[in-house]
Length: 150
Image 1 (cartoon, rainbow, N blue to C red):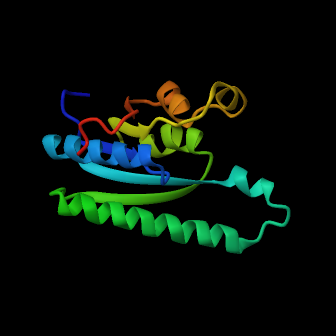
Image 2: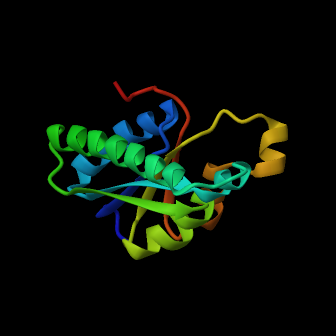
């Protein structure tokens, strides 16, 4: 891996922190002439909480994810990026992003937002950004604030 990022992945989950990560990702991609891959992983573990899983839930989640990613893709193109794509996957984001998706796209940098979980929540379910950082095959930038994104 050189000093230049060619493939940048931004994890998008609909949070404000993910939006900040996206904005920083756009600037990094512009400086590097990189391809940006926007990724949303629909967490299938949440379906287990629904007593009678219906395909409508999954379909609606995918439709909402597609609309969200298309909006971000359009913003990136308007900001001057030429190569922006998005991907919607199912599974656990903390596993799929670093172990599958990053490797599939030969990603050299992953950007994700820090979560607002407290200590107890992190103990029981673990932070997605923490897992991405721990298991990623590449550099990871965890965005914590809006600083320098406007």
